[in-house]
Image (cartoon, rainbow, N blue to C red):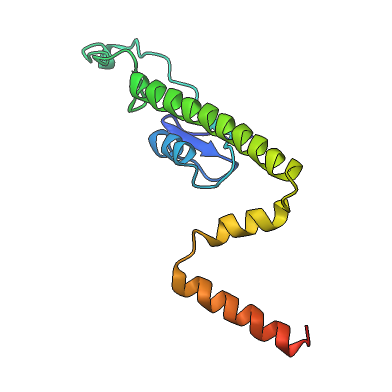
Length: 139
């Protein structure tokens, strides 16, 4: 395993980046996958005479330029939204099951739902192309 400099992190095996950027990448989900982070171990406090006059960071919760409270808040908000997304997904599954038991074709239902988000011009063009292809195939 390669050595990662202090204040840096490696996300999904990529080259090390500043820890703040790595956390931001994971939070924003740039890769679309859950990231594994390997961060450098924090350095031990200096005890030699040269560093004796330095003051420790004011905020103990701040490490490597990242405010721990801010990070915790972001993580908790994402977790709460993930829970809401799961609940919504379960509700949608229940409604789809209800539609299926009422005799609706689920595949066609999902297609109609997807098409309702399209702009009218895009929908019209799509329907014209489908009709053209069907005529060309003799359907």
